[in-house]
Amino acid sequence: MKSNSPLSEELYTAILSLKTLDESKRFFRDLLTEEEIEEFSKRWQVARMLDEGIPYTTIQEKTGLSSTTVARISRWLKKGTEGYRLVLDRQHHTSPS
Image 1 (cartoon, rainbow, N blue to C red):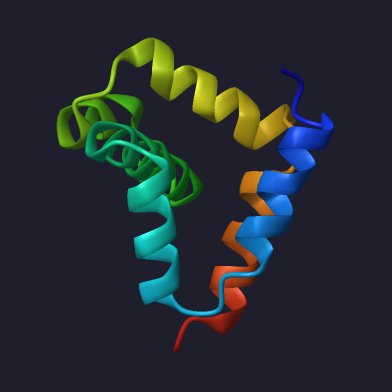
Image 2: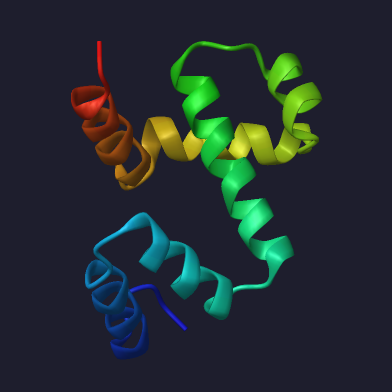
């Protein structure tokens, strides 16, 4: 299934309907296994750490993810569809200084 298929579009629309952290937690826990949530959480952690300039080896040690996964996330962060960048920038703008 492609990321722009009708089924995918329905999933993205469903995610957009979530209004609170609690709603998000409940939806994703029903949608994904705990292991999948943990994996996605680690990938997001890697993107944030890369954005902060933390070295790959430190990221690997802290997350337990492979060098291949860290490199892949780095590549997506630099040359992907700018999804990571979009959310990172939004979080930087809404974070208390």
